Image 1 (tube, rainbow, N blue to C red):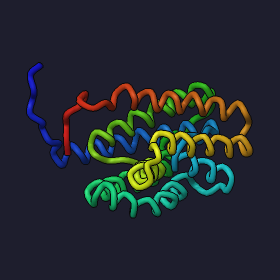
Image 2: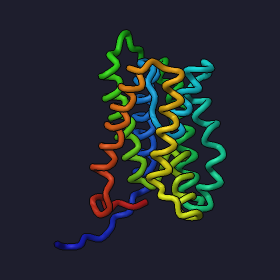
Image 3: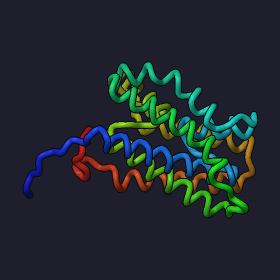
Length: 203
């Protein structure tokens, strides 16, 4: 198979991907908050705290991610960390603004779980392909794997499982069940589309 030279992303391409990716994630969050669903990682923690305290998702999401920037700098470098900081800030902002931009009269829980999970998965995929993440638990998992030999996937799975267990004490069982379907949709989109060698663009 012929090898093609890598074509680095231009700055405006990175900016467009960050803008659209964070808008997709924020719209997915809007579906989840409307249907009172949960997801994994720091977004899941922020959603739970939003339901419990009434404070906005964006405020919690931005605050929860603050401690993880130190790990991001140590492991990923300044460029990745600054991109991630910008993406988290935009998701926090857009998730609050979207509540005024988009109004849902009545959204079936199954549709909200699948569509919200798909939107977040597509948005995160766009960010990953431009060397950006939404920080949080993923960075912690990679750090623990590097420093202590703990498998990052198992760490992530364990923390997400703990979030779902806590959610069972705060949300109805059917909401947690729909949330699991949404999480499967999100992760399936990333697993099928974010593979080494499938996408060669670099930033």
